[in-house]
Image 1 (cartoon, rainbow, N blue to C red):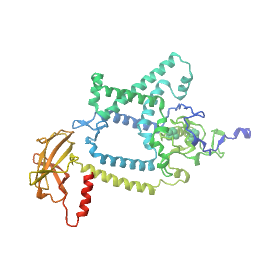
Image 2 (cartoon, rainbow, N blue to C red):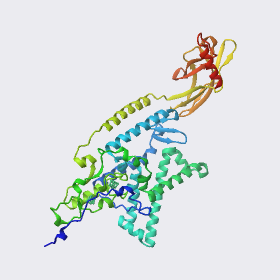
Image 3 (cartoon, rainbow, N blue to C red):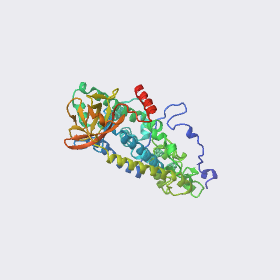
Image 4 (spheres, protein in one colour):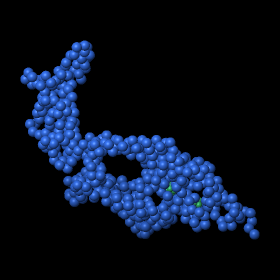
Length: 494
Ligand code: SF4
Ligand code: SF4
């Protein structure tokens, strides 16, 4: 017969919050604790693997896809030229960019409030590259977590040297490929090909960029790893304000799991929870945390602990889902997922912003520009009966055709005289500048400032209309003397 002490389970009740005072990857002395994450196995890991294949296909394939001879996506920050779905955006479209950014941020807030860190776990490039590429290469070369630990402690034999060198060469190669692809999103594949095939001296800047990017990616995936998510990533830092008790997160069902206790078959029927305290969920965690402590900023929602726990539950004949996707409220009181007031407000905001953005995109002009009066000049007198103003025009062509432009006054009888004496030639996907005079009959100028509309024409086809002002002499209207004098003084002062 078994004694009382033999059947007493090891029960731990976790209500200590001290784990929140330090990072799981830093020890008492402040030194980095290296995470040897065990390779997860299970349903979610398999699905994440398929998602990662799709991700790699898109990430490595997109720069090669062209639409009408131009890249489908290009984020040329140095030249301030952006192509999204084949459409070119210039700095002049900054308000569209601004609005896109705001819409994107609201979307992120709404998405996070509803689905927690689903993005981090499934499609964030950092997680996907780390867990689905670099970590897999590491498992392949050095073995699973235990083998990696042993290798680390082992003396420098030829086997250790071979494995470490192979791993780091493979890591650098992968980082080099990622860096090239990353650069292709900025400068385009054609330019990248030139850097790869032409002498280094002709593309020194591009060459240095590849070396720097490769070094950064290698440093991140070989050494910095989960620290990107737990220390650097601003999105990770925002989780505490974005999530609420109704957000869907990877959660441990403490109601079912506690009090946790080591599994012993003979304990069946004793008052312990389903958690058998096997630590498998901790061993697979790439950020080194214990999800049983509750929601933590370091959790990237990678689902590895769900798979690990499900496997343990199956092996002891208990139902799976002790760790699962659920909201805190759902775990606490079995409440259904709520569509909260905060989420309703974000949704409304998102609809408004999306509507605004769509309108701006649909009404975006292919040719756009600005006309500004030449700085420091008021007006010129031409003979006795005319006045003129000098203007600078800056135009941008977002189409794939060269456009010879002529200017016409739309709302006043007057003349436009191009300063260079020729029409403005607007190159495709480029910009052009020019200067011109607008000459108006003196009798037409009835105010200090006259609003003018200038049409931009290709042949007889009006492409767009730009607004500007014509400055004339000061007109003193009856009763306005004091006011106008004040304005005149101000203008002169300027
Ligand atoms: S706690 Fe689970 S979901 Fe969160 S990072 Fe660790 S393994 Fe991934
Ligand atoms: S894997 Fe599941 S059973 Fe094991 S310690 Fe974690 S929560 Fe408990």
